[in-house]
Length: 320
Image 1 (cartoon, one colour):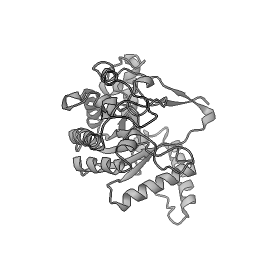
Image 2: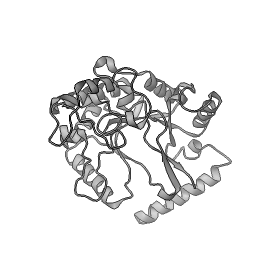
Image 3: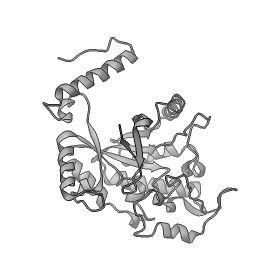
Image 4: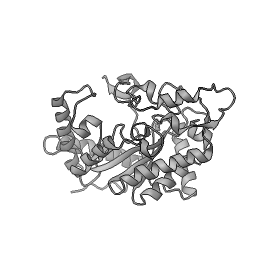
């Protein structure tokens, strides 16, 4: 029997839904996997790394036995998967041009999801981090106050074999420590063309296989200032319409894909209002943004951040 909570006000409905979910988890713990317990309500997803997608333990600080246990757990409990890193620009398109793609890890991820009858999510197409420097490089001088670097250093940064793990090598925009690319820049037209080519190629390759995409990631400015958007190279070079353009290109590549905006820290009222402002502006312009993917808050007194792993975003590890 399904419990009806539609007559309650929105806040009470949310609280009731959380309590019902918690009760269902407790009741289902000894009876069914999570994906089965909630099959009639929603998908239950997990992010998997390259080792899990390929079934190989190399480079992930996991033994082969541990990787096999990880895979078994994912298959048992989840019906949706997202790649930790292998569909991000840095990993899937490290070098410029049509020959600069590395599809093998992403292919393995997608095949893992499909072979296990899972809903496959792509993360992410446009982000200020984990984007190679060549994407932003060009012949236009940087604005006053931004130190220049030689074109050679840009080329060397993205040469084959240099996309090694570590936050200091993420490249593009900001590397995780706030250090930005400071070389000569592409024009608006050049960067838009690179974005379009990348999105059309990647989304087009997995059309009908990856069902949902986090098209733009973390574009909102942090803090309580008046700026809605983060001051990224995407914003500086293209302008605020880069977000709409990214969604437009993704929709062109796969009209049936669910296109999402993704961000964190939305428990903060000021940032949440920025999200509302952004989404309303996109809707007013009929931009095909279909959903939002939101990262939940964690009590900062109970976790530590780790930067280990294959060029990954800082991982939040509960300590309490």
